Amino acid sequence: MFIEIEPQSTVPIYEQLTRQIIEGIARGDMQAGETLPSVRSLAADLGVNMHTVNKSYHELEAKGIIFIRAKSGAVIRSADERVLTLEQLQQIEKNLKPVVAEGMVLGATEKQIEDMMKKVFADLQLRVEGV
Amino acid sequence: MFIEIEPQSTVPIYEQLTRQIIEGIARGDMQAGETLPSVRSLAADLGVNMHTVNKSYHELEAKGIIFIRAKSGAVIRSADERVLTLEQLQQIEKNLKPVVAEGMVLGATEKQIEDMMKKVFADLQLRVEGV
DNA sequence: TTTTTTGTTATATATTTAGTATAACAAATT
DNA sequence: AATTTGTTATACTAAATATATAACAAAAAA
Image (cartoon, rainbow over all chains, first blue to last red):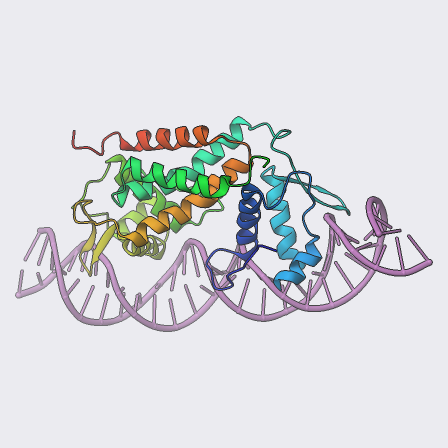
């Protein structure tokens, strides 16, 4: 597994998990249609509790990134079947706002922030198009 | 005051405060050199505890956005005297990463995310240049 | 100079969130 | 038939969040 938990981080474990799984999917480490490890096995791998992983999976489901088949597994939804809703776009904008505002106030130019965004995008984009 | 707290939000009050003050500065509602309201008066205005406001101010100081003069007040630092450090740039990038990754996985294109960033920037930039 | 305001520090308490531990269940898979 | 799966429930600990109150000393205002 590509996931590493920082136990002393201020970011909750289940949130670290959610982010890293999202980044893993964006990076192409995991493909749409694939099943995530079972909550028990991933918990054992990471040395955390089953419920912590379960909470993360349900957060991913709420975000529309996976769907959970009861008593079977958590499957990554394909970007094709995912229609980007207005609600989701607004959520992304809402998440973006404080980050951009902080950058501005700290004195970053629009170009600097834009370049950073492109860099982050490029770093993740690597294997997202079917190679 | 331009600040509105959502008590039922999952975002802690002190964090809502921090974000809205940052956005207020970015928007030009408050200028560099100006003093933020005292922790007691702002707390009374918002109907929250003094220590909640105090925590937010110290978070803003840790971010390098204000400085607190003991027993006097919290002053907004000017963007001029603020040199954007590499550390701060890396922090912004670190904040940007999960937002961009989530957008990608949900199926947003690079252009869509870039346009959102520009929109957020424009919305805030309004009065930041001395009019 | 006296009074008021300020951030600071301390203690105490209540609530919520985060995380773990264990167990049992029923459906799905092997 | 046995195992694995997500689900649900209960119990517990620890940390984070937020409030309440009080006192202090320095700064600012009267």
